[in-house]
Image (cartoon, rainbow, N blue to C red; front, side, top):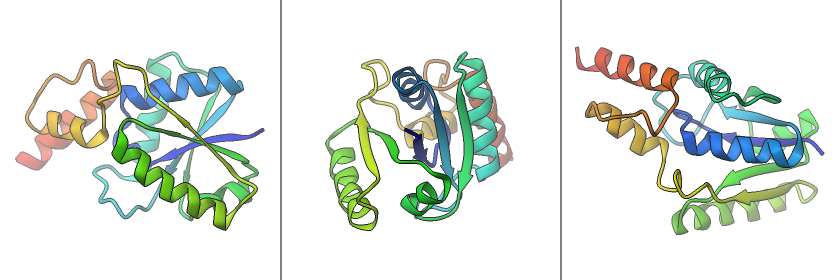
Length: 163
């Protein structure tokens, strides 16, 4: 079984890393797939997001996880690369509704691909990349939200946008 955790990770949070660690523990290996293009406007470039993911994995001591960038429909990427299962995190009811619609579409496009959904730990349940960016914008404490490298990247990005 080849498992992938897709997303924008803009930026990666400790909630994402919680899902990564638990998925890797369950399956023994995992690739994180960072989408290059999204209907969401991204704050960091795909290469920056991939670099932050790699450095965050290292800072968190998580081994056995690859990081790739893709620029297509998820199911097309998965077919091309030989993945058969993807993991997604579910935090709240709004996540469920969106992921439910996406799962139905993915099943229609690629019935052989399986989607599995995990809830983050209680400590990270509230985290989203959007909230983290907002905390960073107002110079709030990021220590319990992201790894050190992500906190530095956010502070640098916002100091460049203000000046």
